[in-house]
Image 1 (cartoon, rainbow, N blue to C red):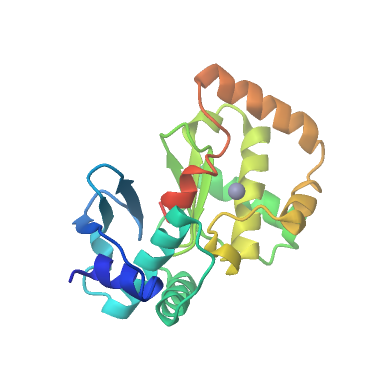
Image 2 (cartoon, rainbow, N blue to C red):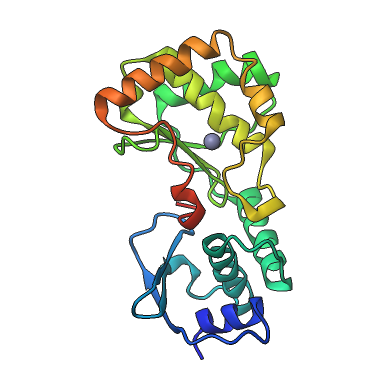
Length: 227
Ligand SMILES: [Zn+2]
């Protein structure tokens, strides 16, 4: 039994299933990522997770795999292993090594931090990414905000997207539904404290439609968390 099968069996104890399970480790993830896919016709559940998971205790890996399976199946259930995994990720964030501050993003961060967070937020890693979708991400495990280079010529939009990602850092890892990227009512209310947010949203929509991408691919995160 591989870890994926074990994760599945422990998540759905006593369930009858005729799936085969395929688990691979891949060096293509920068952080502690993973993707999961159900091949309906082959009756195979296949999962690829970051090589960073190799060497992490099996129970924690099982917790991560279970959270991927639960997302895929929209199962609202938590297990001891999932709790261990959450604790592990929380600690990673606390102890994440700070190694990368892009100067331009660092300046923008300081401005937004002073204006909206009383300057008390610890600076996360700040990097540019070439991807157009999403425009911004916050990765909890490595405490890293990544901003699309598409925003470089638009400092006011950059500040707004940065603010959004800083709110993710502030609100942290939401346990409910194990959602990495949570845009609940509290989050949205706070997001709207940004001056002229409506106009900026429209500008962002225009910008991304010119480049054929979305502001933030929320749904892709359901199966592709911790990218
Ligand atoms: Zn978000």
